[in-house]
Amino acid sequence: MRFFSLMVVIFFIFVSCSSKKIYTKGGTQKGSKKVVDKSDSLKTFYTGYNELLSKDKAIKIFMELTNNNLEPMNLDFLENQYKLTNNTDYLFILKNRSEKGKYLNRVMKYNLILKNIYSENGYLYEQKNLEIKKLLKKSDSLYFEALNFYKKDQLKDCRNRLRKAIDIVTDDKRITYLNFLAAGKQVISSKNSSILQNGVYYFDQAIEEDDSRGEAYYYKAIVLFMYNKLDYENIVENFDKALERKLDDKLRAEVESNREKYLSMER
Image (cartoon, rainbow, N blue to C red; front, side, top):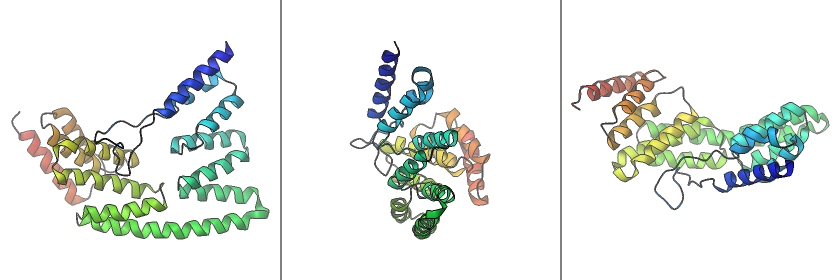
């Protein structure tokens, strides 16, 4: 019976991994203009492994199946295992996978922990972090160039800079947030009804990166209006969520004005 349970879990984990959607850098699914939801990779594993498997077997299966799966949620799981066990094997795996995924801020964190544990080789980890800081300085410069273009509504130039920054580091939320925001605004500017759902996707991803800011909610309301102006509940909800969050004074006034205009429209 236990063997059968093990095989069931392995099957569902395999299905979860193999069904993962592949996206281009822009966020759309390769080979299709249609936007689809991101899969919950390894969801079965997270919710049920303790019930059906011994921990050692479960971790072994997880490590094998996620060898090339660099999603942050999988790294978070491994980091939690390190915290629970203090097994430094997890740290080396985390560092290696973070380097592959260009999660440079994670790499720096793991280098610091390893430096404290293996003090005799501490200089090696310090040197690695100095090299990373140089890369982050370059990505930082690209981010501020992109932000300047964004403020001028030069979205193509903005995203060109952001792509270069993302080629350096993938776990800087400022960069990924602005990239999704600019991509969504490009959809609005295009006025192409066939890709409006892409705009919703981009703004949802921006919200996932930083839910404390209101721009993505506002522009999502605009896209929803362009797609179906009768979608009253969703449009108003996103206007309201935008106003509940951080906005500069100029954009806040714009949101309030457009919200009032929408509410006064005949339906």
